[in-house]
Length: 276
Ligand code: ADP
Ligand code: MG
Figure (spheres, rainbow, N blue to C red):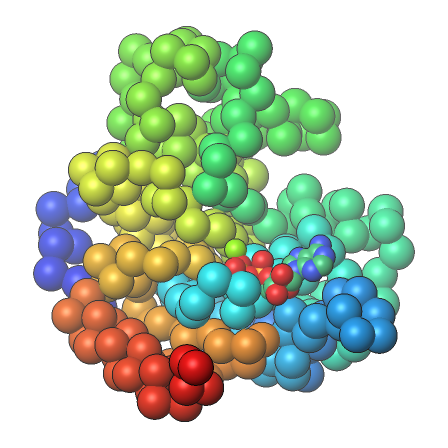
């Protein structure tokens, strides 16, 4: 796989050399088959997902873009076992989520999936390090200490690890949330607009951390973003409109993503009903 983003050498140089999980011939880290999600009924029915087919390969960083309401969050939630589909299938590795019961879904969410929310979702009464290890503590699992040390070192919080979220900047809080998502060594990490509440400098730190986890650890990351600059960190961009994947770009740069978005806007304007 080739990587187009220009600044990869400046980012995450602290990542230990961990063998990539990009096993040849294995299944995708996650995939959706004919995925549909319908909200409501009758006149108020909305097809948030309208037949999505997509694969996410191990060690790949995918950005998902699309207008507000195009189904990005719904897709992420269905892929991450946070919501169930109306029809179609979702696989995480070779597990078909649509056939699993609550107990098995809970285990998959806990052991194989990491999720990063736009609003950080840290526990305010816990320190940064306590937040990072919380999912493992709840599960009663011993962390892989060497892995945890690597993640913590790379997250770059230094002595702020014992600070509460309110004592951290937004960028630091989101890096804690990313470290929490990575700490259990999940098969795949989903991030829904992780830089949406951050200034550009903090956003770049978070994106560098996510990108580094892909480049150095072979982590699989799927990230929703509105920002062409953020999408430029990814290996590919999927464009969603009205609950369908309408385009894909490999090895994106922020300039090419911006151009593509402009052409979508022009297309939408040309097909919009005339204003009377
Ligand atoms: P995006 O993340 O791209 O902005 P969403 O996945 O949040 O889009 O929403 C896709 C569509 O589904 C929108 O039309 C939205 O209004 C609708 N939708 C999302 N969640 C719900 C819900 N819980 N109940 C009803 N409609 C919903
Ligand atoms: Mg959304």
